[in-house]
Amino acid sequence: MHSVKVLLYIGAFVTAWSITTDGHFVPTAKNVRWVSLDFQTILTWTVEESEHTYSVLYSAGKSEDWKEVRDCTQTSESECDLTQELIPLDRDYEADIRTESHDFYGEFGMDYDFPHTNAPAFNPYKESNISALEFSLMDLNESTVIINIKHPLISVNVRQKETIKDILKFDLKYKISYYKSGSTGKREKISDSSTANVSGLDAGQIYCFMVAAFIPSRPKANQHGAWSTLQCRDGDTHLLQDLSPGAWVGIIFILITVIIIFITVAALYCRRNQQRHNNLQTSQSSVPI
Ligand SMILES: *[C@@H]1O[C@H](CO)[C@@H](O)[C@H](O)[C@H]1NC(C)=O
Ligand SMILES: *[C@@H]1O[C@H](CO)[C@@H](O)[C@H](O)[C@H]1NC(C)=O
Image 1 (tube, rainbow, N blue to C red):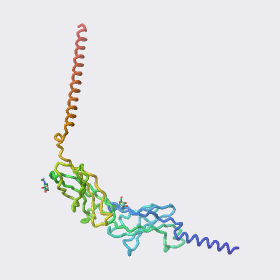
Image 2 (tube, rainbow, N blue to C red):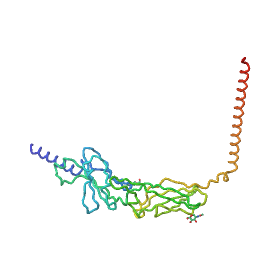
Image 3 (spheres, rainbow, N blue to C red):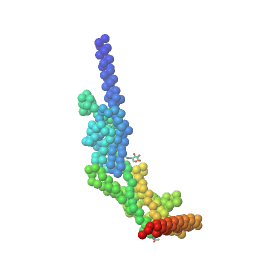
């Protein structure tokens, strides 16, 4: 009877041990993904329980060493900023999120293969999203505008303030999308320079423009930055010439109405003044001096 009990205990222990080491009872990081904008790169994940901590390791490629991220060691957060680590930018980085527990160290020592989740490989240079650019619009003449594109500063913590142009250099091109107001056809122009001319516009027409960073050296899905806000060039506003006869009738009607109201108000005001004047005179004359 005693030996059966012992066997049962051993069985239970082995089962529990194998389940634990299989990772069934250990919450590993789920939904691991990279979020990267203007080369600021964060690894995010979700966790089921909070009693474990997580450590993030990364390597700069298949045959490179794994390094710990100091700020993301035994963290209870569910994100890790790797912006400072992923340098140089143009590498296929790998990352791993390890579930940690003090029990593991106690029972299995440092060599224990921790339950972990691998992140998909990520290359910041090729995959970081690019935010919308700003630009100014200037008429050169009636058929040409000059578009001047600005690169906002990216403040990447410790790294020097840079713009995406400092990072992407000649890989950075610009896509300009424009259309004539009232028509549905859009035209596109790609510019190597942040100052671009768009010519061949119809004189006197309103045109609207948008710009985006464009990086043709990247894989298709990552070539486009976000589109800027729309800016329109004013057409010639020969407003009075372009008015329809109906509009003229409307304008004349409104003018006449305004004049009538003005005359009426003025007349009323004069009459009231006149009356008051008269009243004053009568009241004065009735007082004996
Ligand atoms: C880039 O933006 C797209 C669209 O918003 C998003 O689906 C993708 O996850 C982003 N990629 C990164 C690396 O942040
Ligand atoms: C407008 O300027 C462009 C660029 O300088 C020039 O090529 C074009 O001939 C000009 N058009 C007119 C109508 O002046």
